[in-house]
Image (cartoon, rainbow, N blue to C red):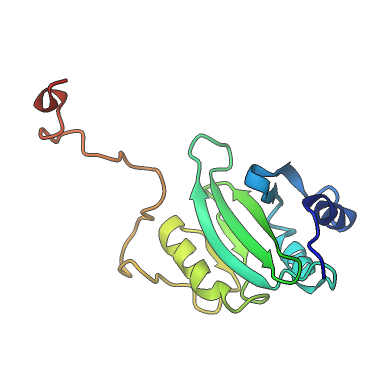
Length: 167
């Protein structure tokens, strides 16, 4: 079986999810697009089960925080079609006050720990997840450390002043 192009892949996706696929780009040749959380389960199921596409491998599932955007928190899916030798990135952005998204563990068992990690670091709640709890941080932690809500450095540190470095 030969490799399918990003254009053929996008045509297959748009044939079924025309208005649900937005912000299509190809950074470094990787087909990237956004969809809504209402359609993510249907889209992921289609990509995995379609006989021509066969995106059977969930490479990564993670979160991202863009505090300057209206919808600040995103969940990023990286899928790989081993048969066709092509990858795709799917993004779903949500408002920081409503961070619920359907779980992908019903499609890939391997999404389990990736979703737990995303919950642990970004606070995204995966509805239907079999065991959504913290995986790397302490259980009684009340913040989500990968969100860009705090300054990177303590402004009160005196050892970081420019005059110590001849500036």
